[in-house]
Length: 549
View 1 (cartoon, rainbow, N blue to C red):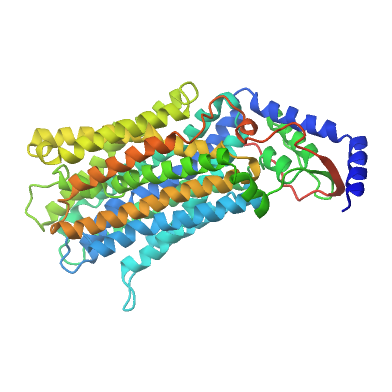
View 2 (cartoon, rainbow, N blue to C red; view 1 turned 180 degrees about the vertical axis):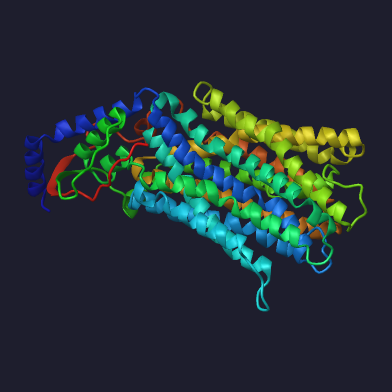
């Protein structure tokens, strides 16, 4: 198009009210940013949070499930799988997470948040059911089958991260955005607790079979399948509501470039009205920055933007080295320090029951003692203290705790009182992971980038974290082999974790403070003149009924 044609079109656009549309866009965004807390915000938190509840249930139940698989499917009914089998079962989900976070993060920016929301939950439901009915055959072991299902499960769980973060941030008002996103993520703690409680109940229900079965261990086999399968229930409950959630006005406005429709959407959201948009309606598309390879490169070639992506990615990577290194191996750690042991003879049914029961109870203690309080401490302070101070505080305290737990491991665990002290320190570490970087690394990438790249950037940051989880699991397994005997290597594990927490302090310095700023301010783009001119009218995209429940 010639420069003269562009100027002519701009003049036509001006006559059609392009400057009014630019102003209308800013006014509509201000309505969202200044909206009072309402029942709609609660609904968003519950719908998005239920997915994280399911995610955590499925991810962290693997620790005790791996122990059960060791009882049932090893030749001597030992209480542990082989190192490589254990690694495969535990690392499959984080690898799937990595794929899902990158894939769904990108698709949500291309196709829309609404169109992708719910698809990832369908994948989780199918993969969970597949695990629960898994069986082995002459050509494949049970662990091989479960690894495949847990990889697919991970893809679905991975998709939940960028979608839930971006949807909650784009609907939230500025003053409560941190608390709303924290409330969504805090469902992870309840999911972790639920997996432990369900494990206790199921293990108690099969107590007699677990103790007295000496050959096929049918009771243990049924128990782990029940623990896995019950994770489908919250996912099924949340599925309908995810499929009927509205598209975020910011996506409609900035990616679909339909300012008028987005303004109407915001009015209906705030008024809690049901409405239907005619798919044949004519829409005026505006010219605004669009997501292209060239635009992506231009945006992130600026240091102020690239350093934010580096900061969010490395902080999540460093945090997940420890978070998943501990979370996926809780049963191993509890057994190592003697907390989940049994006085019954090794190999007996009573020993088997005591070990499983004590591990499940230990997980409940850890959830109540550190995980859940940490999330809600962040909830209380994230919008007053800010994200950056909480993340810096968390990484600093975790560095100190892991130094003590690593270099003082032998001395602390030399007595029964010391073992209890170690569990206390472990709970404190869990607390400051969540009242610290585990929560803030989820929040900041959902705020700090423009709408057209927000989900993609969050997916990149989250995938960096899951890369850390994979490396942590592989390192965990390799150190088990190098140690010469199982679970006598935790001192070195905690020392390594301390090093990564230290690097997290420096990466946190790269991220901006997002407290009290609108998403548009944080995008580092000028919002005046964001809408440049109006393109030719086109048919509106198909819109579904906005259903408020």
